[in-house]
Length: 582
Image (cartoon, rainbow, N blue to C red; front, side, top):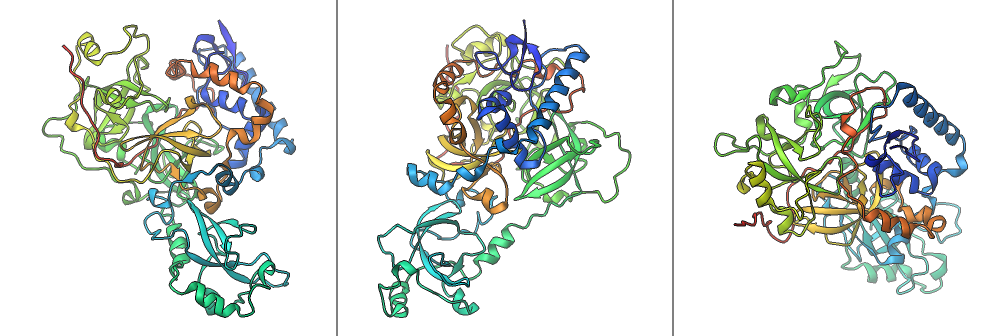
């Protein structure tokens, strides 16, 4: 029975549609629709790039060309009309990290958890009670003056500050980004000839403010004198516009394509596929993402590659130097190694909330493997995806059972509950040796409940308010605040798609607030019913037929990828053992 997506108007097979009610063709459409109305969700994404959101899971069966064109034209017309209505745009004005954390007593992940982020490796011992010099906003003087404040609470880059002299009075406490240009170490005013003026509210408390400050600041900590210089240096990125790279083809996971760096924001790259004439066919990822490589990488390891129709480089474009890309750990493939047909467990890059039964489909050079999700593969292997042997996104057979994670069985497999021992016997397969997997677990510092800013890998240009809800060694379960658990994503602790609170403000990137921030009032009556209904669905079903579409008609067609790449967690190494059954 055909259905029409209520978000984008695409027509498809009802049984392959997403959500229990079968109203949407993809997770992206379901999420967009429920985000404070259809108009608001589209315009929220327009804030990031000024372009309409790309669709990820397009038509779910081949429809007549006229039907596709009509649906797509209607979709584009709707976007144009909505773009003119500025009043419906979702704004960040109503969201404040400081208020959000204060009102709920949340704790944010420390900056030191994010080695790829600015100051991640040189944060030092910045903590509560550190003193800084900041602008004095409680003053009637016409010129900009400063006063000393102490850090009351840290939340990523953001600090709750209290002016010296207020003691236990929190009336004028304020949040600011500690890496901002107006935050200075104690002594900066004296060296720069800037006046230190006490806040007007407490001006009467002391007659000798100099003696007060000497007493209060003796033995106190402040920022390093070169702090602002370190911040500036840590925000210099080697990737530049016009650099050429090889990146995964978002329409066919099994191959790469050439793309050109269009812009760089905080180390995140907007890549435009080289053949995109209007420069709208793009892909977002971090410069340390395992999905991008130097020109020639695919040929060197035997990976599939879509040759460009462009015979020569465009003026000004140049190949990115190979040393700028993230390095993978060297492996020895000469001894016991992965073989085609071996079984394992893997995070599904098209449904990041699930870990699935998977098979090694091809062994490439330099430790790279082509993986397929059992029961969901296209006949031509166009949905195989490439993971390195040391990737934290692949696991030995039995990993989910040992760590009490729900393993998604192959589509159509009816012998439930799923048992690896039976499945291996039935398929005549063997499990990949446990010793070949990466078992390094770093002391990453994340804890359950910590807040952060995380890329929505289902729509990778979006960065959202998020929470760590579960930790399995180096694997983190990321929940997007305000959304149902089915939108959660498994991400590695060292993924370059995770950022400290305040990263968006620091880099000038658009942060997406919790869904409830803009939609709770209008949806309070129906959200609970939706949540209950959606949570009962089969989460691995949504992508079953999306990759079977071979037509290149819909330029907006897009897929979602896991972009984690890292190395380790806390609390010791993982238990990688399969339960042996008779």
